[in-house]
Length: 144
Image (cartoon, rainbow, N blue to C red; front, side, top):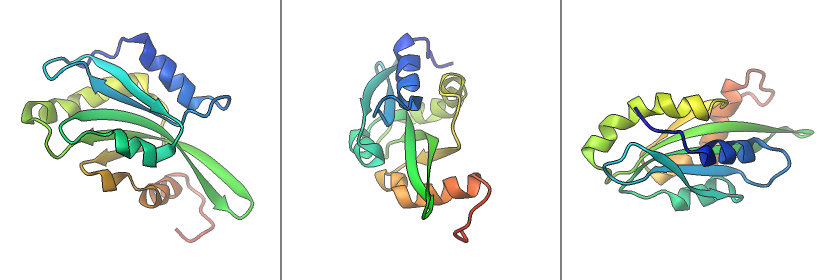
């Protein structure tokens, strides 16, 4: 079981969800290699591109991000994604635990349209994620 009791996690989550801030993502990492306690290690305003730069190849992390995209010529949408990052050099025991810990994280980072499993930084390129969001969102007038 992951420890997601740190109040800063919920504060960062509310900040990303708020229309009154520019914060567009948060990153949760484990306190240490042996710990199951998660903590906020970064937040940012630079979207998925900035988030990708913060992911470490040796870690397993969770991220929550706001994605803005054009639905058509006249409208914009905002959707939220949950990222489950398992870096290519992550230790085996951490990899084994992260799927179980994801359920605990989803109790705190509750509202999201799609879950994005990421093993490489390219898994967080914006265009493929927007296609997933459009499919998850129902009506699409772009033929996607």
